[in-house]
Figure (cartoon, one colour):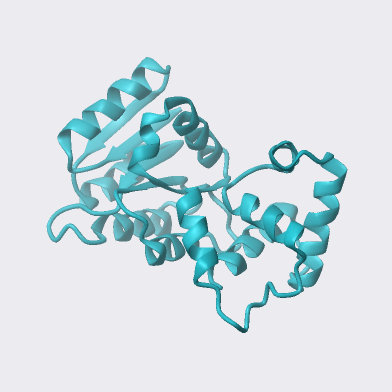
Length: 217
């Protein structure tokens, strides 16, 4: 894969460059601020970009805003955001950029980079157009669900399936995690779409809409 990295922490940035290069990928740009990220994405059209949420000058949400701008200028460009802490509003803002246009999106805590195989797998899934969310982010989103929850009609098992969908897992991966058949998962997914009254569309678009509904409640 051709990859852009945006992180103002030099040690982490260079560490990612080395990790990805040794894993057979090409880092086409490694930058330290949001403006440089946008320029790199427009110039190189990478397969995926890895972006820190907090970058200069204020170290608040410059990375996130740059990622949103990059997706505006290069629609569907895959973005994997890394954050030091669980910041639910940032995850929600980033996922909102998917709309119906698709394009891979991921949000992981930086600690996950240490689990190299899992991190590289997440990166591949985002590059392929999937949605990958850190389990801790999913847990916090679940905890803040409102009383008028549109998911209230879902069974406990359907909620489990939807939570795993929010982590970017395929039906086959969900089946393995829950120790059920692929057919059972497909049935649960169909029920989720029906109960959330999602309009008929492509499977991937409906999955994104279902995940967005889950995250916003």
